[in-house]
Length: 472
Figure 1 (cartoon, rainbow, N blue to C red):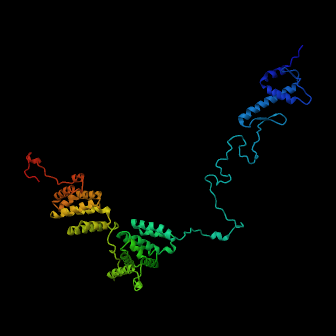
Figure 2 (spheres, rainbow, N blue to C red):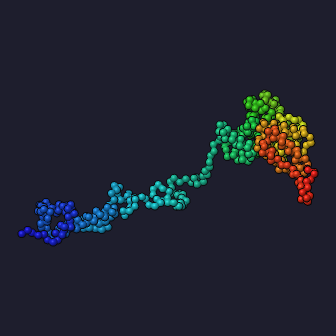
Figure 3 (spheres, rainbow, N blue to C red):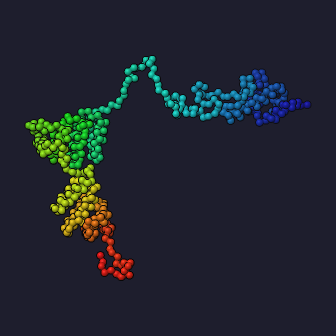
């Protein structure tokens, strides 16, 4: 009669059909050096102690639970102790080769292994955002401590300018000054530079640029030298600069033929402004071999003799030009120019004088004053000669189309007030505008915009609808 396995053994076989590998593993572990596999025949246990079966069941259950938790919690779960008993809460030791002290991963099995938030205390960082540092106290006991360092004053050292660097730096400053005319700005910019031995080169550079410019720029140069001499330059620097100019006149004449006369005028203006000594010209008597330098000194001596005893600046030395003057003075210059043209009738000379004013933005005033002069004159000669001048200036593009239009529009706006003093202003203006359109000075739209004097009504309300015989 065959042997029947106990109930516990049969239940165990049915519950562990899907864990055959674990059973084989436990069976191999149970085998000793003198044991065989006689307990199993055809997949059935023949005879085994109850305690060994119960122990195999617990081991298989513990291993299944360990594999399940390890794949889900990355090392968290139950593990086996050295006595083969399940222990909860144990973790897998870190696999970093550097050990636990240098491992930056979380000990709880969470996170991505990144440093703490902010990273303010890591090596090589300034600190967490918003952290305020206190002043570091000086350690007197430090072997590197130096008592003299506490009284040190650190300043920015600006190297003196060389010749090439001086030209590249100062030339734009002077050229910009010709545009804005602010001597204070030039003085501030020069103070920031370490001119060193190049102080005497500033007046020479400014005068050299002014020789190639206009009369207004020469006037600005004289004002600049007068202001810098009291703030940045000394009188000896100015005298040294004029000495170099007199020696460089043979080269300056090649670019500017009138350089000797212009340099002489600069010398006279400098003496009048008291930035050159009155004996500067006398010190060159009998010691000048260059004819250009002699011509410059003679020119300066003549100008000073003309103004001897006045003690004032030679204000009209460079003429009048540029837009730095008041508007009232410009209007007087324009009226004087027009009166001279009416006497001479030379449009070429009038064009030259208008260019010398150097006020292209103010040419609409010239057109306005010319038309008003026509309205206030008697006879047809003034109308024709002014029309000839405007046509000449329009063809030579001295007066632009925009400035011409603005001049006519200003007359249109003021014709009502002009008519009070000149009763025939409307009729003369219509005649002049038609002639200007025929000559090509203005376009059709500007001609049609010419105002006309209002006509009397042909029918009055109290006349009963009768026409008036007199038409004005």
